Length: 267
Ligand code: AMP
Ligand code: MG
Image 1 (tube, protein in one colour):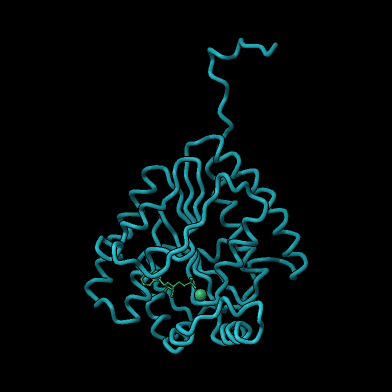
Image 2 (image 1 turned 90 degrees about the vertical axis):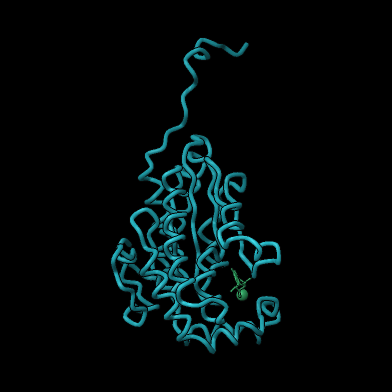
């Protein structure tokens, strides 16, 4: 699964990455679902350890076009984890108050505390993506923001946060199918927004914005993964695998009883 990591210095070309690729896993959908179950079990244990140890924090950033599967990933990958230690922050268009501050202000307020895991459903990356594509900012601004994002994320990691960033990569055809379903299926109408069609019309501009943003902000302290996401089972598997692997690298331990309490007995 490490093949989906974008190493620092890479110039990303999304056209060269197949959104329906499943080569990172040796098996078909059914095997994938079983493997996900195993990983979800691991994640549940690791998250409890994270909470108990109260030392590290974990920030997971999910980005992708409309219908790429950010909500679905959150639902499937974090099934079973204790809600006490996990939080989701979803970023919508900024309020007037938020717009009166620097773009990282509202984001910083949501970063994970020690022992906590936070999932960003969209993030500060919107401020170099949608704002760029909609013509709200000019090149010097988004270029400056890449640097500011890298500095911000570096500061967070130096303070004990593990950051993992995922771009959910779907094809134009798959997006068409999913958006159509939102119009056709009454149980999915609520997900449909007219703006999704406007953004779909700017597919190429978004592609360029994503390619540049990912290339400029994949760092050794906060790397991006490009996740082939046309197949949902595979998408879930990659995200889950990368998170579990990163948490295992933290070598966490349950805190021992302080020495002066070790002689205590319950009567
Ligand atoms: P959804 O994720 O479907 O709920 O949509 C949220 C919408 O908010 C998307 O259209 C995003 O592009 C938009 N959004 C999120 N963050 C920002 C931002 N910083 N500036 C402008 N639009 C944003
Ligand atoms: Mg949406």
